[in-house]
Amino acid sequence: MITHGNSIEILCGSANRPLAEAVARELKIPLSDAEVGKFSDGEISITLPQTVRGKDIFIIQSTSTPVNDNLMELLIIIDACKRASAGRITAVMPYFGYARQDRKARPRDPITAKLVADILAAAGADRVMTMDLHAAQIQGFFDIPVDHLYGAPLLAKYFKKKMDEDWVVVSPDVGSVGRARNFAARVGASIAIIDKRRPKANVMEVMNIVGDIKGKTCLMVDDMIDTAGTICNGAQALVDNGAKEVYACCTHGVLSGPALDRLNASPIKEVVVLDTIEMPDSVKNNPKFKILSVAKTVAKAITAVYSDSSLSAIYED
Image (tube, rainbow, N blue to C red; front, side, top):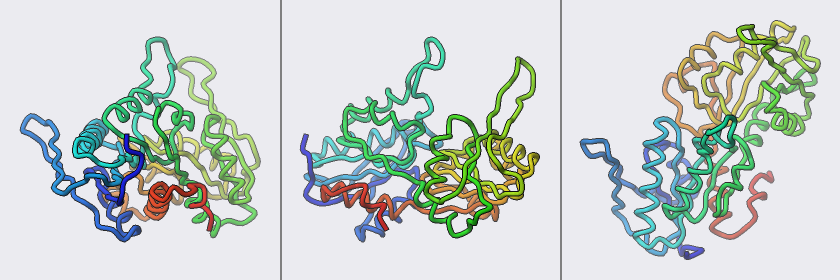
């Protein structure tokens, strides 16, 4: 394995081209084309029109919907670069799909996050760059270096301008307490926790609020919003227990199935997401949503990796 290339080359698949273009603009280098096509039976075809020999390749591709197509695109682009003698290949995955399958919750469950990590390395990736993994320990599933970026600084910077002493950061469930606690420390706010439980089978969930939220503005913080059931039910519980207003934010706006309808009907005043996943027009044009770009953070991280400098320094204003 060559551990360094002689110049940077930015490639992308079809998952999130706007983000790749924004990163390339931040780096002031052109975005190289990876021609993505399909055979009539659905097989993915990749062509690299330009040479990548000896270069430091960064492939920007989130494994968002359609997850399997985007994952295969990434793997095939990696393979094409490896066989074209790239100097070093970094898979830049702002959103790492299959991250929720990170343990055996039941007998005979797969650990798909580990499987994807192994496949990326087998395809020829020399390192992976990603943002806000569902569980930080997934970094240990890889036998290659992982650069784990954080979306919280961007979200905290946005909300800190709005906040006063009446704000409280809320964890939507017990599993997200650590994330909410770290976010609250960044913005200097207090913390509350939604504890949801089902007393017995076929009995509706009971939601208990741990912390003082009465008459306060609540900010629910999570790593992703998928079908939005947890975040919307939590928002309603906060309002029912006396919260003045409810905001929500996350790094990854997966927004699958009924998510958009649920969020529109919920008491949440504003939903802030990062552009690790390309948002459809129904979200971009929705006044309830605010989309913040991670392009500058990703560009700084790419520069740090290429120049062998500190990655933690990119968060220092």
